[in-house]
Structures are given as C-alpha cells and as structure tokens.
Length: 120
Length: 329
Image 1 (cartoon, each protein chain N blue to C red):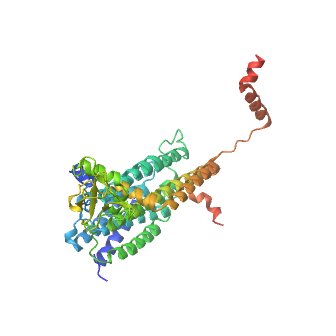
Image 2: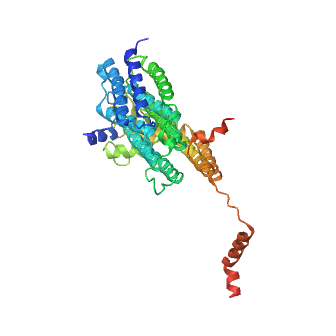
Image 3: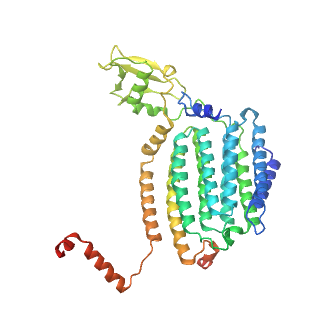
C-alpha cells in the first residue's frame, strides 16, 4: 500500500499529488514540536556535540515548515530555501565539529560547563 | 479570532508534552524514557486529533501520522539518550522520517538530497567526531557513561520554557482560518515550459501528438516558444512543420496535453535555484569555502619539532630526492 502511494506521489500527473487531505496546520504543528524538542535539547544537554546535533534538529524542523509552505503555495522557492538551509547546516557542522575537536584537545572533556570561564 | 482547536485542549496537550520530555530527559536516577515517549505521543495525538475534529473533511491520511510520529519520537530520543552515538543514529531516523513527510508534500528532489547530504554526509561527520572525541573505556569500566551525559542541565526549566514557546507558536498556528487546504488546481510554475521546447517536443512526440517534421514553433515577434500553459488549464500550444508559421500551424489545447507534460519537481527547484537566486548560490559557495578553511585552521594540530628532529627531517628530505640519490650511488 505504501509502495502504491509512493508511485502515485512520484507520478508526474497533470495535477500534482493532493496533500493527502492533510492541512498545512498539521505540518506546522509537527515542525513546531520538533523545533521545540531541539530547543529543549540545546538547553538541557551538556555534551557539546549533542548541543550542535540539537541545532541540526531545529534546522530540520524549519525545513519541514518551509516545504509545507512551498506545497501550500505551489511555489518552489520554499524548496530552494531548504537547499540553502542544507548549505548552512553543512558549514555549521564543519566549523562546530572542528571547534569541538580543538576544545577536546585542550581539556579532554566535552562538557560545555568546562568552558565556563569564557562567559566573561 | 476563530480557533481551530479549543485552547484548553491545546495548552493541556502542551503541558502533557512538557511532562513527557521532562520524564524522558536523562537524570541521575535513570527513569525509563518509554513513559516520556508515551506521554509525548499522547500529547501530539491529542493535538492532531483536535485538528482533525476541527475540519472533518480534511482528515489526514495515515502516512502523515506514521512519519510524523516516528520523526518526533526519534527526535525525543536524540535529546534524551545518554550515549552520543545513539543520539546521532536517532537523528538519522528523524531525517528519514522527515524525508517521508517531504515525499507526501511532493518534494521528491529534496527528500533524496536530504538523505544523501544530511544522513549520508553531515551525520557521518558527527559520528566520526563523536568517536574521535570520546574517552576510551578503561579496563574496569567498560560501560561507563560520562557525568555530563548522564545528568541533564536544568531539565525542569528547559522543558517549561520550551513548551511555553510551543504553546505560543501553536496558538498562532491554529488560531487562523479553517480553510488551510491548498488549491489543487494551481500548477507550480508551468509557464517555465515555454523555455523548454525540447522537453515539450519529446513529450508530445512520445504521446503521438506530433509527427514527422512537426515541432513546437518559435514565435519570433514575441521572442518565445509557442507554449502558453495557464493555471486554469486553458493554455495552448502551437505546432508547425519545418516551414514555420503558416497554413500547417495547428493548436493543441492544454486539456489534450500528455500527463507528463508538466514541470517536474526537480526542474521546478532547478529553475527556482538557478534562475531565481543566482546571487545566493555564490554566497553559499563562499560560505562553504570559508567553512572549509576555518575547519582546517581550527582543527590543525601544530607539531613542534626540536632541533634534532628538524635535522633528521632535512636529512630524509635530501635522500628522497631521486637525482641526488642517483649521483651518490
């Protein structure tokens, strides 16, 4: 059944596949919940790597909202924007992980609280 | 303001969700995260059911439920699992479920791009760094977890603050009109077909609508191809043989166009990206280049050589040159 649905979704009919009866609000709720989970994770976790993983979770939630709006308005700009979100996420991952490796070499710990003196 | 679902249900679901996250977060005394997951799933189900009752003619199909539930439960595990490796693996699951949602939204190109770039490249980098930057297990404590992974920082405050944000967000979301369904008659950017005469020709020929030396004509005066798709489906398409505009010119209304004669998702994204945002592509390229340089500079390990090591390195360098080695022998 899922396979059949995928085929109809991927088929290039004269009219794009219906949103499956799901309204925009459903997708926005999923996106909001996922964003808040990422936010809570960023505040709660003390491991630097997991904190950056939680920012990726927030990027992902924003992506779902963008794609849902793109489908709702029948406009590809939202999807284009997700490509740029991907770019930013990749750049952020590269920089953040380099930073984490550097910090780990200094103090042999991933605890964010170990760098408390940076608060200034 | 007309509410899609009642505020009592909305804020109740947010509070239950906050409780679920709180239970699932790692504490000193490990609580089973399953309870938190069940609470969160219940809260999310209440929210979505509320939305469904608000607009009974727009009941979501069950693929949406499956994918969104997997995505949310996996993201709960991302923030609650005490072992970083498992967090990263659950994040991959989140991305796969999100790709399912993308497919339902007919964004095929991005669904697969996301799997390749996110799950394939970015998360593998994360896994590498997690393995690189973790203290190895000692002989007596193989299963030891770090203290900063076992104990959450301010879980009550964070869960409370997070779900106040969620309540505010969802209040704005569902406080609008009920008619949120997209108009399926709208066609995304099919006017772009006018700049793709080869695709139109191939499609028409495959469908048997044009034969021989006929083709879609180029209207010189208007400097475009003879294709006018319309959003209401009443567009036209001019076909002529190799003699150009004349008696042989005929017209194919949009109702007779073959089913594959429309802008595919990939083509639409490509036009939007290359045609609509060329400057942003350049900026993205510069950002990626700078990120690469920055990562190299940051993660580079400076090796200090003392005098003896420097001399030895020089000696090695001289011996490695082939002509010098050849003459001395």
